[in-house]
Image (cartoon, rainbow, N blue to C red; front, side):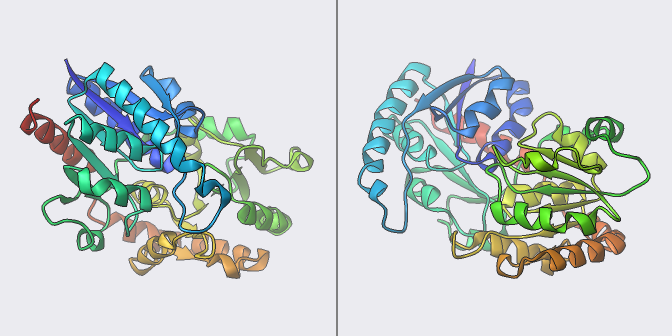
Length: 358
């Protein structure tokens, strides 16, 4: 049986595209293994899929000074040794990496053992972890045509981002029952990202009195970020994080408020959900969410609020604006050419594994 190791973690965006590939990998006859961190979100997300999971040590690569810059490289070196040991044990035909810091020791270890690697970059410009992996990768998948210019010509492939098929199969009635909502009032879903977004959470809660006049609100607010004082507010339902229920909540939502991570916005596009994007500020990130968001805005898929401009009155105004013109956004998204990303990546996996025979 053919074997594949998947890796990627740190945020849900580094895991969900791997999950989207699982049905096709199983159909193609692959034995699937996953290498992630010992206690990262990837472990929690993968555990429902009956896949062998292996934890390794990991450290963060930073562009700024921090005391952990002195200790994290030791964790990465330890993770590299652990990954080599695991890969020797599994002996996979190929490694597919979705990025994140845990992927670096895995990809590097695979290369040292002669195991072919494919990596996927979701954002417009490659992140630091993927930059460290590109030199040893066989192929590099990406979402944006602009990204091709930043990658080695012989490795770059425009694939798009794998979207989980089940997201299209949501049950609106099930979501109404889960949230305790009425069927005759529109629904806004707020997604702050798998780690939560303090600034979005704060402004949404400040805007609640005004928003609840016209909408019901689903608020996915992140681990330990539920406001217990608002648990019994009618028309407002909070979740720390959702897994199986997400497809139903998407089916119920008329408009989505979201960060602008590439995987998140690709899901919104595939589901044709009118959206307001609040990209992570360049002050606390490398700015790729800003590029992603304004790309979608220019294509007529989204409205954008820069985080520095985020106040309750602006949020309320933008939500009303996109809700009342939502069909224009749905039509624009419907005209977008969606690449068959899963099929393209599967062909790449099979060709790369076949052409690199041990």
